[in-house]
Image (cartoon, rainbow, N blue to C red; front, top):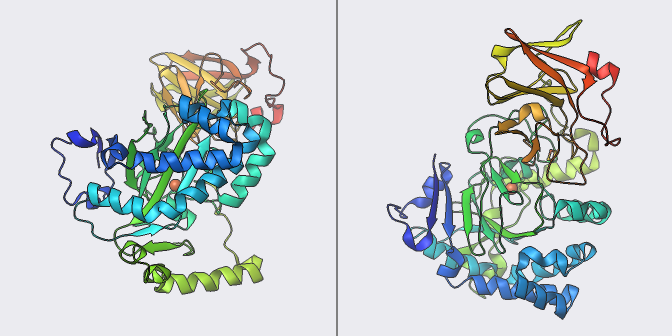
Length: 440
Ligand code: FES
Ligand SMILES: [Fe+2]
């Protein structure tokens, strides 16, 4: 499995014939300026401008066009973002066949027909610190449309969300997207069994490896197998990320969970006569019928709906002693973070440089012990948010900082004193370490 970052017209060494199979084998591709290469950027750009005009007015649309979509939150209020997203959906969806037909023919020369999810996903993520004040509207929208459309999406495989396991994700940057507000793909977790919840997110207690993030310009595309673990970053920047993504499969889509998403057969959707039938080639398979029956049963008898699996037990490598907790130094090699107790994790930043911090992420409870160390930061694995290990702060100013407790190396042990807090407490909102949690 590899990662290829190429300008579309400079794909030296890239054999595009059969590339779709490589995507399904886990290769991740970034094609720079792909939409411009096929004269497709304007199609979606203009549709977006029409959507913004309809939902937020002409002036907002003109400003967005002038300054770039990454500044849209300056001209469109957060409360208007759900309506703008709706309006852009309405403009984009009718273009899907023409858009994908042209893109696929240009990118995958061997693929003649394919099955695509009826509506692309329109995703405006405004900066987290701005969105924070509008949780109610955003949660309502996310409930209706699914996660990830308007706020950060936890690590998942698309098949956990009832999407095909043999699909590919085409993730198009429509505005500038930087590390800090974009997509995450976890290539080292491509292979592996993970528990996941009915929400479609990975279960608590699953350890993840460092995520790939992307620095994209308008028109760039990231292409990856739908069964890669992927998600989004909590937007810690001061820019909005605007992306539109499409899912499709080259062969008939395979639904390992429920089959209720509508996949359109491209061989028919371009024809006026066959268009009304174009969803049936994907539907005419046992998974569709089974899924209808299961959904009806789960609705009628909710107790029969599958529940969430028990999460893996949280890692706790600390031994309670009169000094606090002790951990073998050898169990926390440089560059790693481990769980000490339910409330505390310990990170070995660089040789001999250890810190002990609050374990649960103040955003939505991600377990930092299942994350990783990156330089002087400890990164939350759920939405790729780095916390400065020395100050406990992240770039999201509205989030409380992590607390830091005393921690030192003593011979072959790391000794952590959960009662001795290092940071001065300016953050009452941070959940207190309770005696009970610290001593458990
Ligand atoms: S960044 Fe979202 S849970 Fe940590
Ligand atoms: Fe996804």
